[in-house]
Amino acid sequence: MTRKKFYLVREDMLTEAMQKTLEAKALLESGKKRKINEAVHEVGLSRSAFYKYKDGVFPFHTMTKEKIITLSINLEDRSGSLSAMLATVAEAEANVLTINQTIPLQGRANITLSIDTATMSLEIDELVEKIESMEAVEKVELVGSGS
Image 1 (cartoon, rainbow, N blue to C red):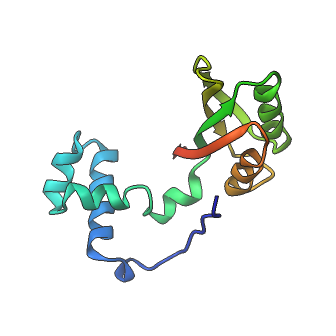
Image 2 (image 1 turned 90 degrees about the vertical axis):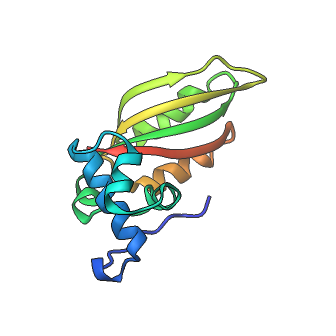
């Protein structure tokens, strides 16, 4: 997996679609709009543009306060593989909040892991790379973050 880098960019340097995506996300987070369709309509943005940028643009305050992440992990069904993966998370001094594992089908299981990263000794991307490098791990995706 390519390491994702983050940049601090002044608002006037963002494209109009990125700025409107941030506005739509703010409407949804504040509860002023309950549906994505309503939020994008109010700010004058297409849904496709919203979905293109929604996971890639964040207000600065959001990036500095996020402490909880949710990972989706595809894991081979091997004895001890889940335990080893959790040990890697523990070594990073992260706190596991929730864990959900599907029943293994065709030798693979999906793990959804919510982690509090407030006291973590690694950066999030470093933890993801460590988990991805494990022999039994096929794929790791960051599917959510918040505080």
